[in-house]
Image 1 (tube, rainbow, N blue to C red):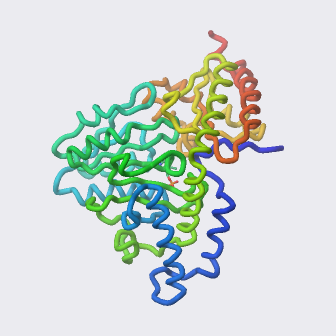
Image 2: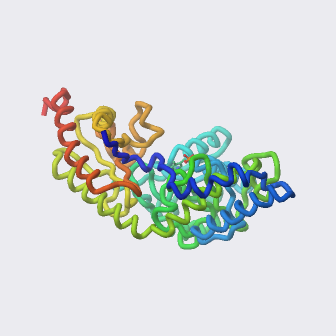
Image 3: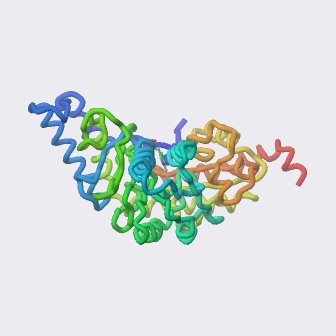
Length: 387
Ligand SMILES: *Cc1c(COP(=O)(O)O)cnc(C)c1O
């Protein structure tokens, strides 16, 4: 059976060119970049070339890039690091109701230690109103963190506008751009951000590697303590193969970005239209236009996302019922609840995330297969019969 992967928002396969770029750094160029000898210096060159490439895609300077173990660490570093460095000034963080757990959980930890966090709401399309952020600011606010695009519903936030507000008030502004780097433009100066998180496995690079952009002059404590790697900002021997692979992935995304976005958004729109047309009582989640080129998230009344996923999987189609993190828990997605879906409707939701290797025929297959699955499951649902 041919399998169709439509879960690129959970993770992507490595591009074969990424793997090729990494290979020499496992065996020949294996040195520790902190070493003085030629082995170390060879690895160091790979590391610093990669830093320049990562800086370029963000419109940043290489010294503003700190390599981390991925999106989760970058987010934790930003939240705990800025909070710690700004503790004398205040204890208030502003974030949103729809952040990834790698932002909301660190905030909850800090709340147990005297932090006050405001979780601004989103509208029915999943968009944060910059005015709400502005109104939430107090003289104790020391950090604003709003994600660039949501991992479940793909909605793109007005980051540049929120950034302008933060800048006016002199408050550090972080964005979780894990879903956007490599997919849509992420220039830190256009976005008006001081800190930005990214993760390679979301854009055809390897897992376990990412970066935090830190604008020069931003006050932040280190998060990992130990050696003085990354100019003392992050201890631990650099993951050189991973970093080199991430840089190659960034290069490839940069070359293809416009073309891929155009291709994927046309497949996205035909999938949305096909499913809405063929399945009664189905809804699109998130703004129809201000969303990632590859994201489709829909709710289907009277059924469980999990049952749909299992039935799709039997046909070789891989999708998700929210985010990779929530699909194993029984709680409905906090993001779908935040846009006003009921618990029942939120439970009956699916995310299809398209990618570099998605074909038109894959989308056609889903449009053909899902209506039958939904119909079959609805026939079994007591709720449906009552209608
Ligand atoms: C995947 C993801 C993360 C976590 O990144 P990891 O590299 O897997 O730790 C954080 N934020 C968003 C929006 C994500 O999609």
